[in-house]
Image (cartoon, rainbow, N blue to C red):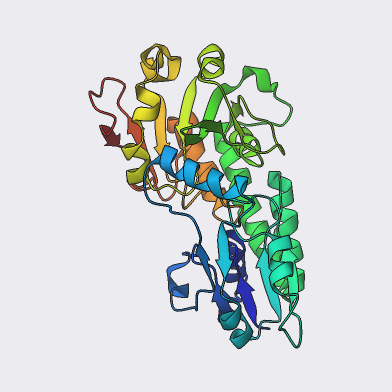
Length: 323
C-alpha cells in the first residue's frame, strides 16, 4: 500500500504500526520519527510562520478571513507518487490540510482516485479509536491493537504510581491551566483535559472534546490554577521562552499561585500535546511530572528539551531552568 500522510500524528501512527516502508509522501510538518526525513514532501505553508506568537496569529487570521487556505498541496508531485491512501484531518484549519480542501484538489487529474482518510479525534478515547481505524485501513490491525494495548498498559502504570482513580472527585485534584497559545491567550481543549485527568490533575478553562478557545487574562487570574503548563502549539521550548513575556508582563502575573509556588512548566508543544499520535502517552507522563514530580517517576526522566521549570524570580522572560 502506498501512503501519503499530510498529518504529523497520522505519520507517527503509521510508523508505530510498522508501515513506514509504505510511506511515499508526507507533509512539510511531518518530522517524526527522524528516519522519515527522506520521504518526499508534498505540502507547504502559505503563511509566514516566522515571528512571535502575535505575528503568527496575525498571519494566520489574515489568510482565514480572506477565505484562503493555509496550506498548498503539490498536486504534480502527488500524482507522481500514485498513493492508494492519503491521510489528513478535518478538525483544525491551522493544523494541516483539511479533508474538504484535499478532496477539492483531487477532483481532477487523478486516474485512480486515492482513498482519503481523515483523523479528527476530539477526546483521548477518540484518539485511540482513530488509531485503530487507521490500523484496519492499512491492513495493520494486529500491529495497531498491540501498539495501543502496550501504550494503555504504560498509561495504567502511570496512573497507579500517581494513585489516580476514576472514582475520585475531580474537584479534589490539582488544578492546571494548559496554555496552548500566548498571544492571544488560549487554553488547550480537545483531548488535553483528558490528558490532564490521566496525569492526576483537573484542567481549568477548557473542556474535554471542545476546541481550544481564547480566554481572557482576567479569567485566568480569577481561576488561579495550582499549576501552569505552557505548551504553545507547534513551539519548541526555545520558541516558548522567546515569547514568555506575553505572559510574564501581564498585570498580576506575579500574584498567580502557580508563579508564587514555582509551578510554571514549559513544555515542548511541537513534539507533544498538540499531536493526537502515540507520543500523547509521553505527553501524559510529562504533564504528570509537572503535577506530581515525586510520584511520576518517569522512565526515561524528562529531558531538557521536553520540560523546563520557569523561575518565578526570573528577571527576564527567557530565564528558565532545566529540570
